[in-house]
Image (tube, rainbow, N blue to C red):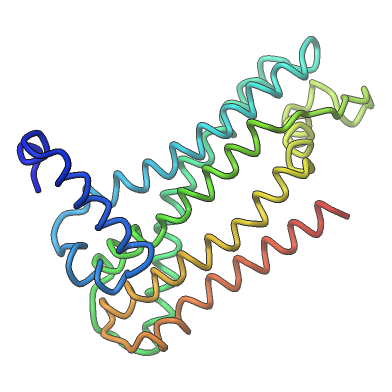
Length: 237
């Protein structure tokens, strides 16, 4: 349904969009066979951009809070610039995640089949990352409700002449907040959800049975879950 149809009949347009996104999340086999399409990649680029922007909003909020907590000689121009630079990580990371996830899926699925192109798998993988949008929303909410209570101790090791060390110290305070740790840990749930969707995308491109595609997707998903588990345990301890 085009833009003109949306203007003439917005109810039908919204209903159609709801059906499409429900199929992505809960019936990916139908989505990839009926809705994904074979040409163009603009919609996929926009989806990844939205995922990254939502994450960017969260980190910008966290940076603004940190700038309010740490001031004076601690928050030099170099430290401030690096903080703002780090805030861009979710936006850049969303696109890197898309490419990296696709590369891993393409490489592992090659053990089962050489059918299909990298381009089509790349398109399908973008839709599989839709749950990452919810993960970023959850993390943004955690940043919004968290208050940072740690104080700069004034030690020689942490001083404004070493912006890398100072910025790392500031972000460490965020990482140790219970709400942020919890949101980060719950990211594993959304990763598994993405894996469920991606399995159908891999099966569609590589012409695999779904159970084979699940084994392909299990490689990056399990690796991510182990990484998050390691990070969370390290943060708690």
